[in-house]
Amino acid sequence: MASFFRIVRTGVACLLLLLYVAVLYPTFTAEDWRMPFVIFLPTGVVGAAMLRGVLRERKRLAREDADARQVAVLRLAVREGGALTATQVASRLGMPLETALATLRAVEDGGAVASR
Image 1 (cartoon, rainbow, N blue to C red):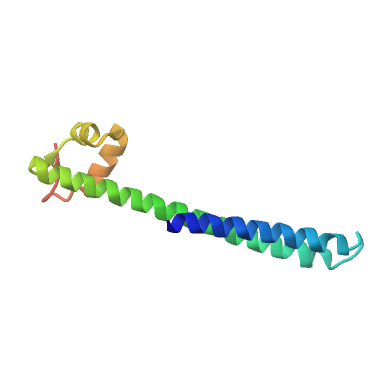
Image 2 (spheres, one colour):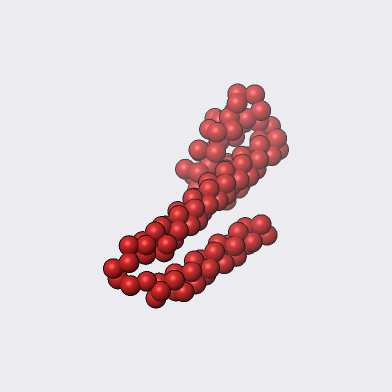
């Protein structure tokens, strides 16, 4: 739900930015030296801030996804007695073999989970 509000907030910011440019742009002549500072500098700053927010959100979602995969592998390891293969992880959790192998390596600690 929080992600939905972030998307709405970004959309509102885009609309306000467009409104800002649409209202102020006709007030300047082509020779006016203030136009780049009043219109394009704030537009660039807001655009860069929005891009930074999107990139942070992607990183956070990727981290949450990796954490969820690791928890699923740990639960599977408990059920299987601690020794898992990448093929077991991939087939039982329904993920690609490469993802299963990477997740298994990230979780493997020599005690709770050991790959064969």
